View 1 (cartoon, rainbow, N blue to C red):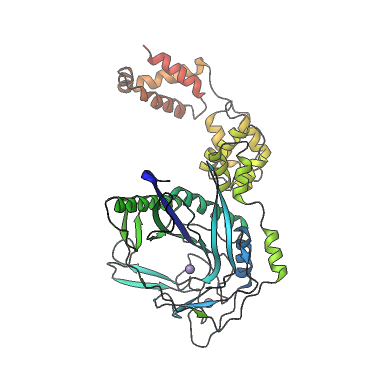
View 2 (cartoon, rainbow, N blue to C red):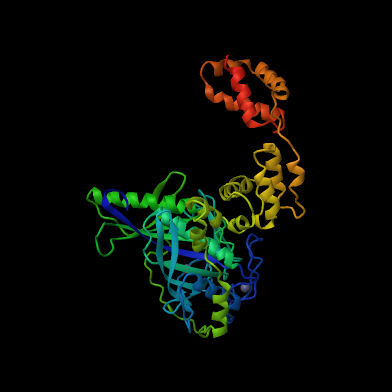
Length: 469
Ligand code: ZN
Ligand code: MN
């Protein structure tokens, strides 16, 4: 619930790019980041007389995702032509699904700090992606003000699953959580890299607001192309605030497509390529209906393990919500289960120092990491960080690092501290004059000088003592 009794009403439309080896209806390689127009053929360039052949793996992966989203699987689904004209769509239509999608009527549980929320899934259908238009000149790669545009057909005809939710989401924050859980789910199913920055996970949001207790829906706007989880949360929050402002000043919300500028936090209308959504859908005459076999559906059901949301709830019993949520949505909970030791300490190291070290969690030996974490207060900080960075190597052993010791006795620290204080007379003056924050500066200098081997607590103590007079 937002301020003044206004309730946000949000539905998401998500596109997930499947990482099948080949495209949706031809045998071209499905890859990202290659030289433009080097992964094309007569089918995906829409030469006359060519015929599409559906990618079996893409169909089977859509079934898996449908199962994970709690959907009904259609015994007989159809492909339709969605007609519109645009330079990145050489056929003049996109092959998509319309009234009989592969998966529909699902629900996906999103855990939050205040309990579970169940988000309805309208549908999950399979379609092909358009090619990529690159606008040259102008600002930020947008069509407005561009000098000319180029089309890269490598992406044309690659498989996409489009997921549409019910308008069940009640805040930008909840939308972010839904999307992060969905992302983790498709990554674990092994069907997509789902990286928002690369466009393999894309999200649009339909946003409206209504008074608490009000039935029905008010006019909605559509927020397009938000390419990070944070932008999704911030963009929706900003649009909700804007709409509430419009109503409270006696105005009316106008139905339109909007763009959220994350740098400035502002929302502006988007020049849309087609505002009138009349796509003249009709069944694709070149393709027979898709009828998943009983074996295919059973295999899909079997391949879906415990979902991320359920694992968060399980982990929450031993950790708090944020840590449990962080571990699962960053794919670190599997390692967490393999590392012995104090649960909270292990979780914190995995989420902070190990993540910062960029170590692949799947490559880490849990037993060895457990030894290291147990000793983290005793060994030099630098040795601990070095060990974390090395912990993903196959032959990693903690022993070498555990043998390192911190320097904590005054006889060893004092000469170093004295030298640093003498060399920074100005800062010493400032500290004594009341700039207490400079203590961190001195600690840092000592750590640098001792190559991270000094015991932080001892250094703090000695410094305070020496600076105190
Ligand atoms: Zn092709
Ligand atoms: Mn679509």
